[in-house]
Image 1 (cartoon, one colour):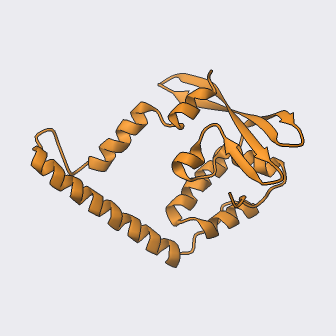
Image 2 (cartoon, one colour; image 1 turned 120 degrees about the horizontal axis):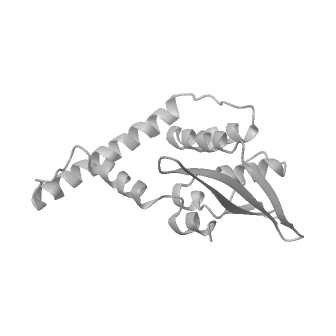
Image 3 (cartoon, one colour; image 1 turned 135 degrees about the vertical axis):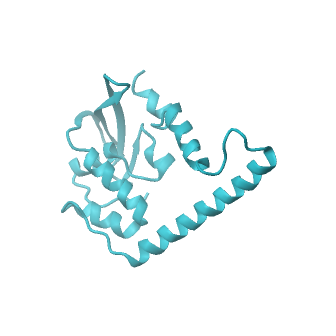
Length: 174
């Protein structure tokens, strides 16, 4: 059951989702904001977010980022993603270190791995979560139970480590 928690919540806790919403409205609304002011400030927040994204897109096209590793996959991602998405991938890339990977099944249709990750929660808590990664060698389709790609459009550390282990050094087209 442990491995299903990230699948259901997409790897994001309710606290993280709440913090994300709070960060979006930070500086725009407070406890004394009226409904009319809220609607106006919501529009301002959306406009500012679009402007920040446009600036990030511009910087992605005009600013050369550097790879932190010698992996062809990182170079490939550099040419595919915007600056912010590339940096998110780099976090995942470094996060794949020290992960335990266990072959569960290898048949003619797919390969299935379990990837163990120690997740820190609370002040003193540590919990081992097992993510399941499926890889179809014929179609190069890769899916992970953390659903990072589905929710954040970033290849997760679990899928990345599995691809590298199987000598797939470029990101599959899917």
